[in-house]
Image (cartoon, rainbow, N blue to C red):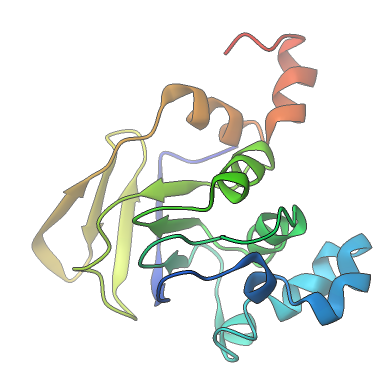
Length: 168
């Protein structure tokens, strides 16, 4: 179940981080073991990430995060690594759908004023991002109630199983 807020450190990435960079293709044999695959998440884009990421930390990207193939394991291992949410100006379309369907929170927002290492507080209920060390920073974001409901149930299949319906 998704909480009303998440607090963690920002890990900054650039534009066009592909699903192959998220889930290295040379390790695709690990897709049956997401916990093991998560130990290698984003290691091609930022080698220290997988070992250093803490529960509820944030991936903060420029634009087009998750572009490329429809590798469904990519958002799964981000979630498995403990990432609280991915913030980006835009997402690859298939990645976005796969992430929401697998219960991974994605937030489209302007990431220019977020720096690597910033401590962020994401208030999901009020849809605003704050920096814990900068009281003047407050950035609203939009997220549909439908997406919040799906993510809060851990993904689309969990939502359907619990509510016996696609009505969201």
